[in-house]
Amino acid sequence: MDFIRNFPCFSIMLCLFAGIISSGVKGRTARWINIVLLTTVTILSACTLFYTLSTGESFVYVMGKFPAPWGNEIRAGVLEAGMALFFCIIMLLSLLGGQHKLIAEVEENKIFLYYVLTNLLLSSLLALVYTNDMFTAYVFVEINTISACGLIMIRQVGRTIEAAVRYMIMSLLGSGLLLLGLCMLYDLTGHLLMSNMKESIAAIVAQGEYTIPLIVAIALMTVGLCIKCALFPFHAWLPDAYGYSTVSSAAMLSSLVSKGYIFLLIKIIYRVVGFDIFNNTRIIDVLFVFGLMGMIFGSLSAIKENDIRRMIAFSSVAQIGYIYMGFGMGTQYGMVASVFHILSHAATKSLLFIAVIGLTDVSGGSRKFIELTGSAYRNKWAGVTFTVGSLSMVGVPLFSGFISKLLFAQAAVQVDGKMLPALIVLGISTILNAIYFMKTVIRIYTPVEETSYPSVTFKDMKLYAIVLVFFIILNIILGISSQPIVDMIEQGLAMFA
Amino acid sequence: MGANLFTNYGEAVAMILFGIGFGNLLLQSNLIKKIIGLNIMDTAIYLFLAEKGYIKGRVAPIVADGVTSVEAYINPVPSGLVLTGIVVSVSVSALMLALTIRLYRRYHTLDLDEISTLLKKGGQ
Image (cartoon, rainbow over all chains, first blue to last red; front, side, top):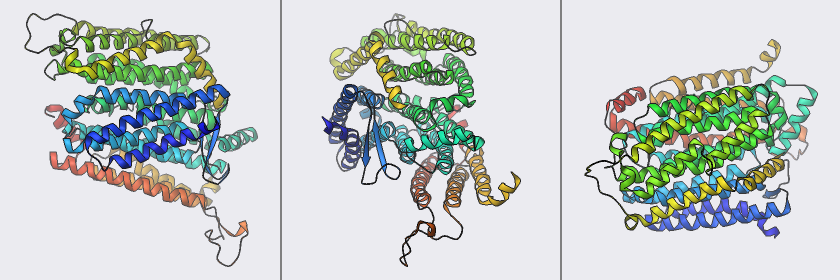
């Protein structure tokens, strides 16, 4: 059983090697390598999750010969393994669901590059999830940025290149701030490993020295990661990047890339700074306010939007706002709600992106609402899936979005000063969500008298339909059997501390 | 506080440079100027690290004359971090430059705001 301790390292290495091998083969082979890789990593992560659940504690894997204060380490607990497993599943589904669009939209001799980039993306995500070393985290943050930028611009139209440039600029600003904060923290503590940093920071705080530099360093890192995962007001690059890139990229960017950064922030809060010290700074209040503003303004922009892909992209801004609102509450319950929302949003947003592509395909490729009228009748599978995603986003029971809203509301009730604003904004945001998602659902189910667009049946899109079914199942699993997952998250967060 | 600022003037300069680079990357509309800003920003961090890693009167940690005492050498880790950082920043700059070439070939301008206006008016 102890052999399983090697699995986190294996999965990262496998992804890197698969990326290298894929760069020398043709598109089809690269796709098969990618599918095999994703399945293998899913199994490895599931084993790790099972192992950590059965032992009930996290383990540290030393990379190389050097012991703790000097060497590099990987650390895996329930939350890390669970996240890795979840990321792999979402990535596999997004890639399979968007495969026909990928073949249509990307030049044939460049498809293998797409799989190279996804392999690199997966390796960086896994490294962000598992690493115990801050500088390694920074390096993989940059690898993540570069591969995400490639995923945006692999579809060569002007919009995507512009979006990729804007994405790179914002990301580089974010990683510059992260690096600066990290260097300051290194100067204060003299360590780069998360566990040693935490000890030193606790000692510094106990002595009451260097309060201002410490807060500045924490603030720089937090702001850097907020910029990178598009918290309101840093979301200007987001609609174009999600709206015009090929659909698998949009699904992966919204549900994996931004979540990787958020997960790193959670690790910093728990494993580097310490939950209590982080909460005693006033940074959480700032996060709370910007989270609330994101929830409202993201939804308002989504309502104004006339392009269905961009509407879903703006909805991401609102959902990221929810996650930061949970951080801002400064309690364990808020954190659990945020982590659950990471899962719930990742599952739902990738579902929505993949479902929308089915609807736009039967509407002549147009994303305007007027053209989408009645498209759910022309592609029944995509219509049903989109409805499921919308209901989940609005927060109807049975689907995952309801559970995260419930958890947020429960967490809000237990915080004194922040209960009222959190609950009010949660209510307003739900209504706004309902306005634009239900508007779309009604629009796609409005029958049209005569249409020139063809209908598609199961036979035309077997793989796509199967992927949609898996997405719906995943969403309903998250919605129905939420209690074991919430328990697992609590256990994982306890292992962090 | 003022005295600290004077003794740590290297760090202060690094922070000022970081601000200049950050501002350029954020506010310039010319893509090449943005990339210059990016490089200033990254270099400022390396200056900061180098300043922090250097201890006056000591030398680089290469054992030459059989001196193995820790007191004789500076901390090697910041130098390692600077090297890694340089690699990252080179690859990111290369990617940005490649993207800039793509945009320039398509729109014949380096002004990002102008490109955005062109895209908003219509066309892909």
